[in-house]
Structure formats: C-alpha cells, structure tokens
Length: 334
Image 1 (spheres, rainbow, N blue to C red):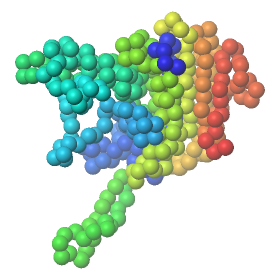
Image 2: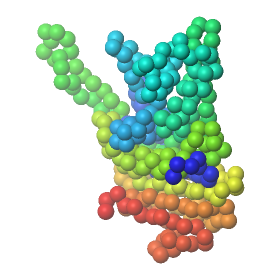
Image 3: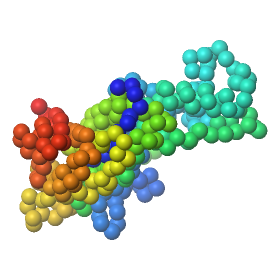
Image 4: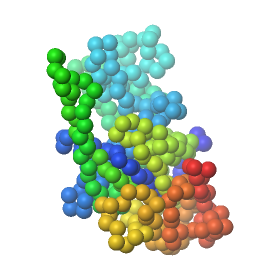
C-alpha cells in the first residue's frame, strides 16, 4: 500500500444537491455557476479538491498543505510562510533559518518534508515560492497526478432566489431586522471526471494507499459536507477504472459516455427534483470498457441504492465479466 502507484486510473463521480448551492461564484453574488448556453450547473475542480482536503484533515487527521492558518495578529499565512512550516520538520524548534547553508538546501528540505507529510500535495501537486533572503529566491513545482475536469450537471437547472430576514437589527437602535438573499438550485445531478497519472506520481510519491483515501474522501467527504449552503449533497455513483501496468493508456472523457434518461419524457430538465425521476444510461460506457478489456485490470464501483443504472453490468455478472472484475454496490443506505 506504500509503493508509488503503477497503474493509470480514470474516475467518474456523480453526486446530487437538493435546495443547495454546490459552488457559488464570489464575483457574481455567490450565485451557483451556470453555463449560459446549456443552462447546466458548473462546479470547479477546486471545490471538489476542497471537499477532499477537508475530509482528510477533519475526519482522517491527515496533514494537508492547503489550509487557512492565521497568526497571532489574525493575518492569514501566505504560501511562502506555509512552506517554511516544513523547513525543519521535527527539528524546526531548535534550528534557525540561518542554519540552512544554501537556497538549494532549503528547497530540498521543504520538498522532502512536504511530500512526506502532505497527502494533498502528493495528489494535486503544488507551486511553492521559496525565499532564503532577498537575493536568493526559488520555487518548488509538482504537477499533480490527480486531475479533475470541471464538474457539469447532466441536465439543465433552475436557479431559485430565496429572500428572508436576518436575526439582528439593521443598525443600532433600529427595530427592523436585516434582509438577506441567497441563490439555490432546487436540484442538480453533477458529474465529475478525473485521471490519475502514474507517471506524475513518481515525482510526488503518490501511493495506492493515498488513492484508497481519495476514493473514501470523494464519497464520504461529499456526504459529510454539512454546511448551510451544502447540506443536501449526496454521492450517487463512483467508478474507478484501473488500467494494467505499463499501458500508458486511458479511454478519456468517460463522463461523456454516461447519459441522463428521464423516466417521464415530458418532464423538463429544470423540473427534475429527485434522483428517483431519472436513470443513468451506462450502455455506451459499458461498450467501451468491453472493447478495451485487454488493457483494463479492474473496475471498482460504489453505488448508492437510490440511483438506477441502465445498460450496465447486472446481477451475478458483477463479479467477473469479460475479464473485468467488479467490486460493487457498497450501498450507503444498507
């Protein structure tokens, strides 16, 4: 479990939100992000990575590099100062910055400690400014082995504006409470696609054990993201396609091989309110998997029991089918 990964992987992750804001745009009144042409909901890869990082830190007690740290004056630590947290490792209390003889020494020490201690850097990479003094500056750059595209809903969505009153007066001596507005989506079924690159993993030392935690964090982190704007998110399907060692191959864009099918053809996309109103047509993806079965080692699946899959592997075929091994139906409600 501690060896650097040797197999490329593709990830397909589908989750939904009800009466929530999955990813507000801070430069547009924190409205949910919508593609104006298609009307589909967009969620940035940064939002998914934040979910994963928070799960690592809050639930698994793993160190992460990208987190907000304040000093005694209430100022937020910048990337340069954060990097220096890893300059001396366990000895940083007894050593001083002057003890580092060169900028290269400083870079090598920070790089080694960051990769050893921070699971998010091993996964997602980093660019770090390093400064020994005003004349000796450099950086550390790692391309993350785990890369996600922007998440896109499988249907067009509606945006709903909710108005209400706040808990406090609008000013000192005022009798009227403040008013508040927020934008929500009544429903959105969101699909993320990612690739895990075994070649980049050589440099960040990403392990199979790290990937196991990534899968757990995507599923459980989404479910446990319980904040006012995010409560109501539920993971529905997670596929991990693991390719054979040395293939340097992946199918690509597997998110485009899954189609949403409404059980009532007359139902508008924007009127969908629950996963029970739709099914996922997996037949095109199944065909591609079978076509590339010689390059595939394993396909693993986590599936919520409320989502319906059509054209997929069924029943006893799940265990072994055409040399593809499935570990399936770890239902969240059982």
